[in-house]
Length: 292
Ligand code: HMG
Ligand code: MG
Image 1: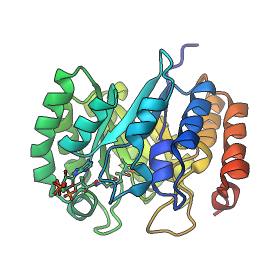
Image 2 (image 1 turned 180 degrees about the vertical axis):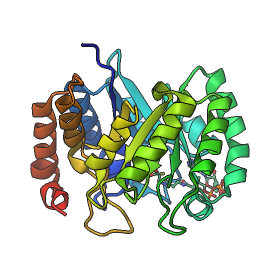
Image 3 (image 1 turned 45 degrees about the vertical axis):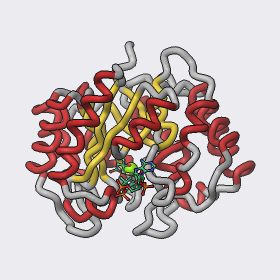
């Protein structure tokens, strides 16, 4: 059977941005190489955000220049604005992920802009990225709940997604930023997104903050979602939930997809070894965080 599911590994970006330990470039590069060797075809290697806002990502330029790129693998980077996009292009990045939130307060706190200001700024970003022939995906955050505003009207999510697709995004990644999504809500939201945009243009970006990541992935799967974001070992966390796990763990996701008869091409042994390496050699305690 053909792989008709995609796994986007976001550990080196979403995972590490939420860890208090700052990894040196060599360790980040080693992590990315291990993930690719284990079969991951999409890896988000870091972000070009302001180094004062997220010091964990300050050296993404050097990481991007140092990694050995394998053919057939997409090395993604998260980009917040024009300065970030210029840095990404200079560093040789060919796959960029733009982002904004579906709740005003989160968008303001995260990128210092209103939703409408973000949508205007996106026009220039897409224009430059498309002229550079970059692949583009776009995250919409807080789609299943905002830590400041609570429930978010899913109609607003769909309207933002429409605009981002119109501008040229190849895929919208629906972000459950702080793991507030409930399974039936995720099933319903995913169904609406897949019906509107098609399953190859939607991904689910789940955080496991409340332990519902895997259940929510299954809920999305039942609604036709076939692309999922995850982080190795559940690396990461949440500033609003001390001690909580980060993104849905890649091994949990791979296990789920393969149990549903969908081959991923990703080695579970390799994911286990990489997680062990993160724990033994780098010093993360991922096992403890996984057991909420
Ligand atoms: P700002 O302070 O409003 O920026 O930050 P500004 O445009 O006013 O510029 C101020 C100064 O910063 C200028 O320098 C710029 O050049 C510089 P000066 O002229 O004063 O010397 N600057 C930069 N320097 C380096 N790289 C840049 C950059 N931009 C401006 N990119 C900004 C605005 C967007 C940059 C800031 O708010 C920021 O970095 N925010 C990112 C926060 C972040 O990383 N959040 C986490 C990622 S999102 C996420 O995790 C959610 C996701 O996983 C999905 C989900 O879970 O839902 C994706
Ligand atoms: Mg995230």
